[in-house]
Image (cartoon, rainbow over the protein chains, first blue to last red):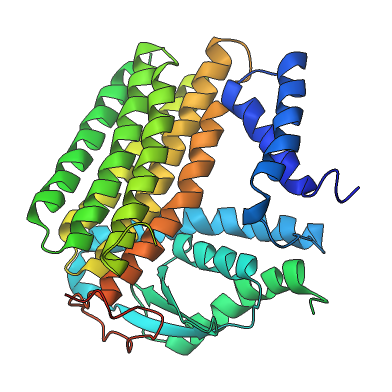
Length: 165
Length: 90
Length: 113
């Protein structure tokens, strides 16, 4: 089974993307999409060394809802700050110590931080222990770090890393 | 049709966004500023193409928008890599 | 009804796209300028693409979802670009309104010329 279908999630995603790309749902494209979803993981297997396992699908679902809401909140937040003008901004670099270990979870966290209110991830340290984040308007770095850890890092850890190693 | 009023307003706003990004591209002052401006210009172009598609009722502009999105991202990553390492392919 | 929904989506999208570029032109250092295009512009174009999906789904009486592809692509790539740009800016030691963190051993020093 493993050898026949090395990355089931990737295959499913690829088939779905193919249907979106051709923008129609016919039997022929379903077959072609399934075929591509089956073949492409073999051709690119060198890029996917580790198996992705999602441990808590409902946590993932809740995380996605929070994520979408925070994208909208983040855009309104940054729009308000831009309209109010540069004079009252309080930018700051904040260092977030990471509890996450896997590359996938860390990159998801960094991307989430960049899309959510007031923060853009700027640099991951070489040992993957800390993430430097630039914030647009804050005076309380500790509260910001605590919010990032509780709101985004904890669910990601639960979804991708519970029982890891 | 409310769209007949809204679409020209949207064209104006996106065109102004285009000009602002272009101004930042010319002014700089540093390379990352210019790359960021270029990246924003790609996204503004996508916005303009999508508006044009709705305005003219034609779906063919979508393909161009998709290509610009992909090429824009690859271009931005390549330029950043160049700034970071002085080389694109490691 | 549909007209109103489309109008709201298009206007919101255009306004956010404009504000993103306004931030790019208006703010004072690179790191703060990075925020506008990453969040506001991305959501703006996302709104426009959703408007386009609704428009073509209704007009052609079939679901048109390929706009979702571009929306997803933009929402995945925008933070990656922003992260790389910020990393490059830190590497080049651009001037910043906030005190910049210490250089990391991760950033190579052989290309500083």
